[in-house]
Length: 389
Ligand SMILES: Nc1ncnc2c1ncn2[C@@H]1O[C@H](COP(=O)(O)OP(=O)(O)O)[C@@H](O)[C@H]1O
Ligand SMILES: [Mg+2]
Image 1 (cartoon, rainbow, N blue to C red):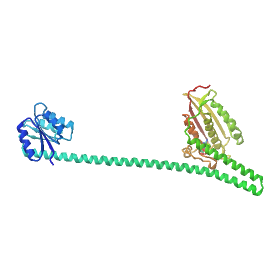
Image 2: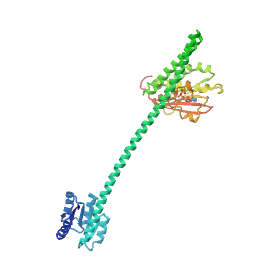
Image 3: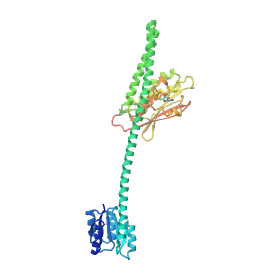
Image 4: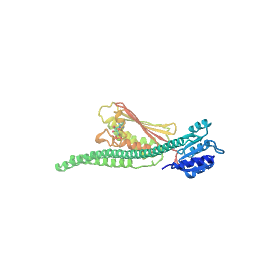
C-alpha cells in the first residue's frame, strides 16, 4: 500500500496537477494551500511523507520543514524548489529533508524522490522493530542475570548456613564425647565399686553440662538483636571485679595479671553485663595464649588497661605476651565456631564480644605478633548520661 501524502503549495495549479498524478500513481493525497494549513493537516491526518514548496507567503517551506522535524523526526519531507533556490535546497537537506525536486516538476524526478523516501520509511520501520526486539532481548537477559544473582546469593547463604551448622555439630560432638567419657568412668566406678572412678566421671559429666549450657547461652546471645541495657558505671570497677575473679587462676598457672587503670575514667553509660562478658572473653583468650603451649612462654603476663580517649571515647585493652596470632589465623578469629583450641574452644567468644561492642556503637581491634603476644582493644563511644548519677 502507498503511504499517505501531504502536498503543501500556494499555487493552485501545482496542487491540482501534482495531486492528479500522485493519486493516479495510487497515493492518498491531502493538499494544503499554505504552511499553517499544512501543519494543521499534518496533525490531523498523520501523513508519512510531506511535499512542500520552499517559497510560500506566511510560513515558508523551511519553517514548515523545521516544525515537522521537531514534531516527529520520522516524517519524510521532500522540498519543491524553484531554479534559483539551490542554497535553500542544500540547507533543507542539512535540516534533514529527505530530498528536493526543482520546478517545473518532472514526473520521473518526483517518483524517484518518493521511492527514496518510501525506502527510508521502510528502513526506519525495520530498524525501529529491530531496536524494540533488541530492547526486549536485553531486558530478558538482564532479568535472567538478576535471577541468577539471586540464586547465587541464596546458594551462598545456604553454604554459610551449612558451615555454621557444621561448626555447631562439631561443638556438640566435642561435648558429647566428654559426656560419654564421663559416663564410661561412672559405669566403671559402679562395676568396680571404685569411688575414685565415680568422682572423676561425675566431674567430667558436670564439666560438659557447663559447656553445653555455655554454648546454648552464647548461641542465644549471638542470635538475638539486643539494645545494650545501659547504666552509669565506672569501667575500672568492672575491671577490678574481673581482676579478683581471674587472679587465683592466673597465679595457679604462673601468669602475672597486671592492672593499668586510668583514674580519670569516671562514669560511663554502658551495659555492665555485656562489657563483663567481652572482657571475660578477652582475658580468657589471653590466659589461653599464655598457657596452652606449656613452658614455651617465659614470664607470661597479662595487662588490662583502661584509658579515657579524647573525642568522647574510652579504650579498654587486654594485652598478653603469649603465643600470638599469625596472619592466616588472624583473618578468621571473628568467624563463627573458628577456634584453634580443639575441644577446649567454642570459637564464639570473639564473635560475641564484637557483637556486644558493636551494639554499643564501638569497635574491637587487635594487633598481634606470633610468639610475641597480642593486644585486643575495645573502643566505645561515651553517650551522654540520661539521668542517674
Ligand atoms: N589473645 C590471643 N592470643 C592468641 N590467639 C588468640 C587470642 N585471642 C583469640 N585468639 C585466637 O582466636 C580464636 C578465636 O577466639 P574465640 O572466638 O574466643 O574462640 P575460642 O577461644 O573458643 O577458641 C582462638 O581459637 C585463637 O586462635
Ligand atoms: Mg575465647
